[in-house]
Length: 244
Image (cartoon, rainbow, N blue to C red; front, side, top):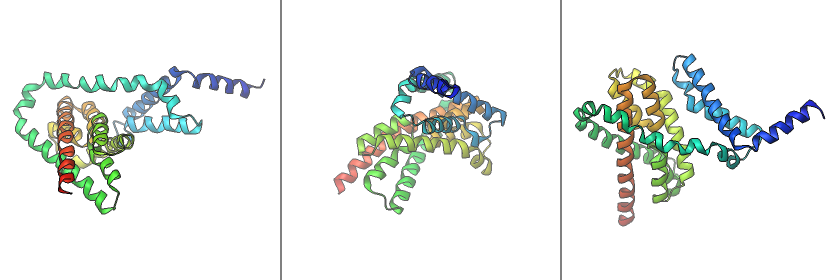
């Protein structure tokens, strides 16, 4: 048996083990995070985006089905829920700061959600997309679990909504710093709030990596925008149905 045959047998054995895919996912993220920090948190090298590309390249190169990969990586998926709930801790610890800005927060969330829905619908209408695609696109600006739930309720495609949501988060996290710097927004609370509102979980992680205050306001924006979006989109959908 040649060395190549032996290596192939090892590969066949490893890819059949769920632990291998969990290890691959964590390893890809650690490599991406190392590159991110080495480059002084350069936004384009967002570790979530880079790790997704690394894992995807591996799956495509070796023709591995997603279901096989997910059997091993689903433990990380399970932790998404507790990680999201854990964002309540920094909010609780800094509640005095948050409560002092409650009026500005509520107005900003409401206007931000309406703008996100309007611009998404406007672009979809301009491109003459079908109604199912529009329904899939509309919730893209909130965290994936909420976006998928909204998409299912209004007749979209939840799995595609999840992909679009991740792309939105990565794009916002990567370009958000440049945009905020361009408009000379220096206040860390405002910067964090913008990240959480426009880029949900990925943007919130980005804000928390930069500044504690920014992270708190990003978590507030992410949570409230999810609630408001979950209320507004189905309501708009029901009203539209009645009018039609």
